Image (cartoon, rainbow, N blue to C red; front, top):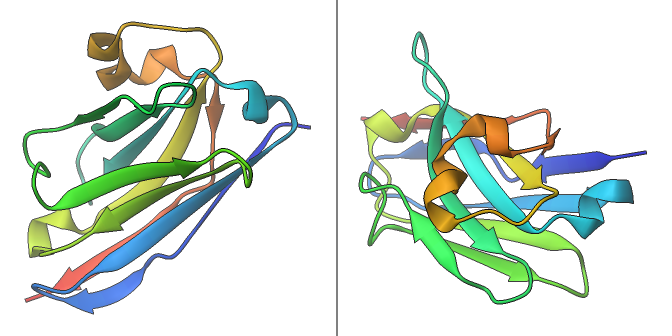
Length: 127
């Protein structure tokens, strides 16, 4: 059974920090790359960050560069998203996703590249 389970969301004030975790199990463990997406209220889902399991290559959306850091622990099959200097516009449901097939980094922005999805975790940043 494929599973991606996110945790770590919550309510934080502007300027605060949160760390999201995404634990992979089943077929998701064999993913080539993992991505974090978010869906703000009333908006479409958007790419936040991605990482390749094998090499650790990372990619960030411009809106989070310098504030968010993605990392992975291969032994724990877990991907993390460290979020600092949070802003109200970061408020969203955050999803982790796994891409089974190797793809160019530029493709990570497309949700269609990913085969596995978690259930999402709410992040709310108060002003």
